[in-house]
Structure formats: structure tokens, C-alpha cells
Image 1 (cartoon, one colour):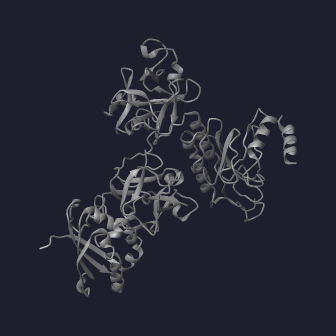
Image 2 (cartoon, rainbow, N blue to C red):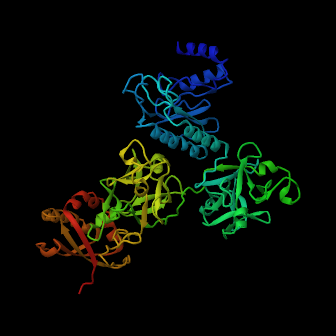
Image 3 (cartoon, rainbow, N blue to C red):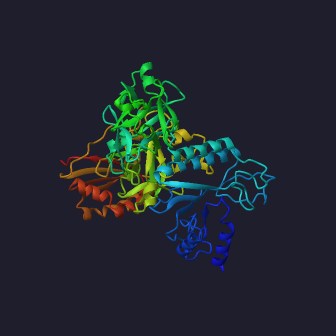
Length: 633
């Protein structure tokens, strides 16, 4: 019955020219044999595209054929499926951001939305944020089309541009149009956003794997791919700046050599430091024009009108098609002078020290004694100082790793839980074990940019939710937007709360006193005002450990230490002496003298899962730990 009716429907409607795509199944409703049904539909009307099951990522299953891979992601746009050699990638549904307008609802007060907003301004901003993310998916994921939910409110949904009765425009249509046009510009290769990173791809046939780059000073084009070196990717990435000579034009600052811009001299384009002269400013300014060839963008010299940024023989010049010079060769001039604005090959705006331990210090005034830490698997901010426990100091220390999902960004591995990383899940930042999934790796990758607050700091932008940044809110850590449906999206304090000082363990940012954190299990803890150096690996280490209990928790401290000291034999460690005091006059509750055979043994003991799983018990009992390296006499 279904197939008979489907055939009659297609025969009846296929003469309507506005129909571009047939979708026999949506989100798995009534889905069966989707591959066979898609082939049937294609045989009945081969002139149109076919999706076998729209939204197969969320519901039902994908038949594996047809012309389109169609994801539904709310609010999204999220991370869409990649296209294949025979199927384009489409985001068939995203958005669903709602606003109820009293007096214009089908069911007053009851309409559904995937995310509700309080007013038109918030709805507009959220639409602009969500839709703007499509730009990165075009280059980054090969996205070909998207459909927003939805043009108007319907009976039980209030997520339209218009109300149910079509009487009220629910958002600022000028802003909506502007972001829509920016998405189209990204698809056409002409989107070059001021203040953001971008790369410029060659459009000349046979050379489309090449990008505008620099080799030392001269500007060149070179092949860039995912396997290219960091140096090549950075050299092929530029900051798009407001034109140095004209605010209506553009200048391009090197990502890897800050302060140096593309400028022409003797017609050759090169990278050179800004000398502050008006000549330099003019030479380094280019005005964006429609691509001389189909699509893309052409960049006309500000002070040599009629000459455009052009590649020829892998060199870059300002040229015209006159034939007056070798670089003015009219052959393929239009294509050579047309570029495609693309997502940057290097996404991080700030470089971080790879494979080094760092701590993330809060910079919000009044809270600068706090650091990002993990507690019971959740991201928090904790006060960390000289009297903090060794475990808390370790909990607030992370090793900077190359991004798990994008090597031009970064991931943060827990220093005391090897293989565990900071990641977001349902917007909360967590410390979880890497599970090998693409989703985990994306959730655990962050692209640092210059901090929104102060100088010399960083903001950590989510790799897969680029409108969200790591933010502390009420001592919890989230990925958050600047205004949104959740309390942690509050615009109040957003710039400072999403900015962090990346500091070496045991140090605060400039202007504050040292705060001792632990750099590694193999680094001894620092006392207030002085510290020990890291010890070598092959010598016996003798340590004096001083422990202070929380008031009334003296017995709990002793019980905890009984458990962890019982692990010593497994690591070749020796408890030489153990003593207790009455804690009067600030004396430590317990004193231990221990000996460990090597640095490796100390590391193994500190990270022993039987010990780390007792973290909650330890924190409830132990208020402070000091460790000193000593010499036995």
C-alpha cells in the first residue's frame, strides 16, 4: 500500500518545479527497506535527489544509498556527517529555538521548543550564533545545505521566525539576513571575517590543493593538507584585519609572525614587519571584490587599482592582465586572481606549551585564588594555596596535549589520572577517561584565543561548539555562550569568567604571590615562599610528610593514612617512622618519614588507582599536606 501510494504521489507532484528532493522516510517513522525504497524513488524520478531517511543519525537507520546523508541535530548545528564520493552532506534540521508571544499562540503557554528564550533579542542572538556555526561546517565538514526549524510556529511548537498567526516577526530579520548571507558567502568562498583567522585557497584548476602562504619573507602558494607540518599550516593562516590604509578594505597579518603583514613591493607580495609608514599601510591593504572567476573573492591592491593579488608559478604578485610583465600574463589571469576564503589551517589564535604541565587560574576579580580543578569527575574551581592538599594541587594541574580531534588545537590531560582529559558533556566540563570515540575527542579539544579579559591570558573555545567557551560559574565549570538559556550563559561577567591565566604549576599570574601546585607526581610540593627542585630518577628519595587534619577528623586522617601506607610494599617504599601530635599551636596531626627507591616508584605510588579512588575520603579528612625532601643523619 505504501509503495503504491508513494508512486502515485510522485507521479502527481513531479511536475512541480520547486520540488528538488524526495524523502520517503523521516527520522525512521514507518521505515523499512530504506535502500530499496530510495532506489525505487530514483527509478520513478531520476531527475531529482533522494534521501533514503532524513535524520537517520538520530532516529531509524541509514540505508547507505541515495544522494544525500541527512542529519538532524538540535539545537546544533553540532558536528555533521562527512559527505562521501556519491552522497552530499546535509543538515536537514537544526535550531528549534523558541519564543512564546502572548496572544499569538495556538495553545497559549504550551508550545514546545528545543531551547526557549525570554525575548526577541535573545532569540535573535541565539539564531545568529547557531547559524553562524554553519560557516565552519562548510569547509570543515563539507556541508552542502541546511534547514532551520522553522519558518513559523505550528500548533504545538513555538520555534518559528513568525508566530502561528503570521502576525509577529519574532526576531530581528536584518540580523537574521546578515548571518544567512555570511553562510552563503562562506559557501561561495568570499567570507573573510575581520578579527578572525582564515586561509586563502587557490581556485585555478589543477592547483586547488594550494594555499597562499609565505616562505620566509616572499609570499608563495604551496600545497597544504591535514598531514602538513605545523609550520606550513601556520604559514598558510592569516589574521584578517581591518585595512591599515582603509577601514573598508582588508589587511592580512601573519599567524606565525605577529606584526608582519602581506604587502607588495616592486609588485611582489611578501611578508614584512609593519614600519608604521603610510606607504607600508597602503601596500598592505587590499580591497575585497567579487571573484574575477566564478565564485570566491579577488583582492584588489588599495594603492594600485586594477592590480589584484595573483599567484603565478607558485609566486604571489599584484597583477593585471596587460601582459606588461611576466606576472601580468593574461593566461588564466581571472582564475589566478580569484581565491577561496577558507577555514584556517591553524585554528588556535594562541600557542600553548605542548606536553608541559600547566594550571588554569581564574582571573575574575575577587576569585583569583581559584584554579580549574577536577572533583569527583566534574570540572570545578577550587581555592589552591600553600596549605592545600597534595591531591588538590594535582587535581588542579593538567598536561597540555595536542588536540585529540584537531592537532591545531589543544587537549588537557589530568596530571594525576593519566589518560583522563577535560571534556564537555551536556555543557558541563568533566574529567573523563578517553574512550576512543570521535565524540569524546571533539568534546575534549579546545582552540585557545586571546583572552577576553586582561592581557596575556587565554579563552578556551570549544572545538566542536565554537560559540561556547570554558567558563567558571558558581565554582562549576561549563562551556557557555555569552547569554543563552542556562544560568551559566549569563552575560554578566562573561568576558572575565571565560578568561584564564595559563600558569606554570606553583605560580600565579603576574601581580599575585606564588601558589604551589604540583607539577607531577614526581615533583615535590612547594612550601610557602620556597620550593625543592625535581629530584632525579635513579636515587633513593627520603621524604618528611606533615599532615594536618580537618577539625574533628583526626581519627579519619589516621584511618585514611593506614589504607594508603599499606600500598607501600607494592612499590618498594618504606615507612621509616610515623608519629602523631595533639595538634596544639598549629602543629601537624601526623608526621611520617618515608623512603622511596626511585622517582619511578614515587610516581607509581602517587598514581596507584587504589590510592586515587580514596580521594573523597582523603579530602574529607586531610586539610593540609607539606612534603619535604630530607637527608637522614
